[in-house]
Length: 172
Ligand SMILES: [Mg+2]
Image (cartoon, rainbow, N blue to C red; front, side, top):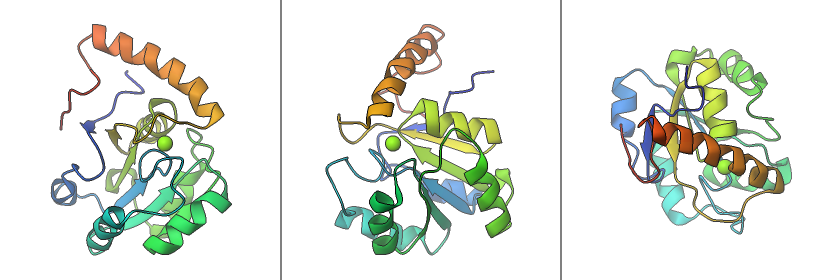
């Protein structure tokens, strides 16, 4: 079992085939924040992200699930008009349990989109939800993430040897 391996891999959140997700019964999208929706330097969502979310909100329940603190996450959630869970402690599963209960959805209806193996993909695969990996928007990470990146690089290398995953080799 490849517990960090994404089900799909896109360059960024704008390249994802959301129509296909919808056709496959996904009703709830969980977005990571840091380096997925915005770089660490950005304190507000870009117009491009706002436009995307306006479109997605018509079809999906959206929740920003971030390991960052509320102070960082709240401005994004309120400007984008979506729900959020801050300090989510991914890859631990409480955020998923909370979302399943609150929105009455099963794992088969949920997709998680994020830029990290150790948190976003690990959580999604563990919970049996659809995992979508995107390239990190920026090079700067949280301190804890820098540590995770080292592990991630090791795992990516292993996956690459097994021809399962290669950075920049997008698949769906
Ligand atoms: Mg991230």
